[in-house]
Length: 130
Image 1 (cartoon, rainbow, N blue to C red):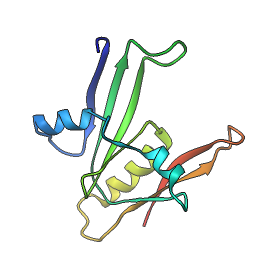
Image 2: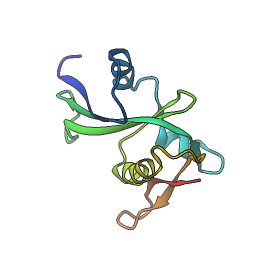
Image 3: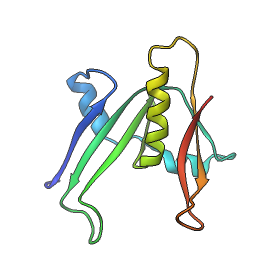
């Protein structure tokens, strides 16, 4: 597809070429929003191993959609990739990840939705450490 580019803007560590290609491809990633919505208790537990921030440019975006946007890919310790475009989620996640980096204590994140104060009937995805 021409007019579509993905670059890695941030990563937890130095990546090999194969890892960069694999992480820029989100077609085999689980949508975090969909996973939370379909979870019976509305929560998804992830033990993060890595993450990348993807900067995406899409000339073929639909009318009214942003041609430039960001996706966040969280790689679980079992290799599952989760993708979301939620800035609110990533802000919470990054605070946890940065604090726990290098710690030996076991930890994971619980992902869930909270009601939005700005949009009635809508929710936003966030996470907490468990």
